[in-house]
Image (cartoon, rainbow, N blue to C red; front, side, top):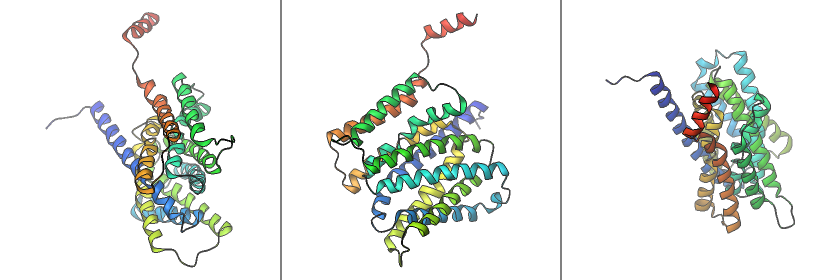
Length: 309
């Protein structure tokens, strides 16, 4: 049998983590269309409350032994990440009422660009000029698809941009806490916090439904199993073996899947302006994350070596 060294094992774990995150991203992309359809028959806070409460219960039942060993650090991490998830999904879901699945997916993907800038406030490390360039390109694309002829911004697009900020913070804090805590316990807590807060908001702000359409339960169960319980558990475990910026660029593919599924299942019309804006957003995401990965030229390496000498 072939034996693998530490570096090969780390590489395999990293590749598995990346593959798992890509699968999560695909399910999230499809859920933009599923959720858009569901919101025509159920109020947004109730949808989120049921979705996240069931997801938390589902995870707690399966991993009850791990939950019994909950630490203070996991409790703190779960509460902080849970608040970020709550803010992200509330703004995204309400925003989706006023925008299309494709636009929602692409605007949400801006969190990829925001991660290094928000991390800067925590680490005080300059994100790099490629990140600055990527941010400029991305926000140019956002302006093209979101700013109307009278220079106003659709309320749905504005809320979705706030959602991107919240998800960027979620990724940063997830990396911070899962590498020194149990990722499953944090996933249980973050879904539980989101479920509790959105259910409270539903009782406070929305009329209580007499019945819920059976078809809505199909959409909710899809979101519970694949997009919430499974997705956050996989994301938290995967981020033990990859960085927040690496995870962000993979999950940025969510926008591509959202646009594709919106075109196929929702029949969203893609104008040249919209496609150009989408292209700029996606291009900005790639610039932000892929350009820093280009190794320096041999001449640059020799120069550094000479300086070190």
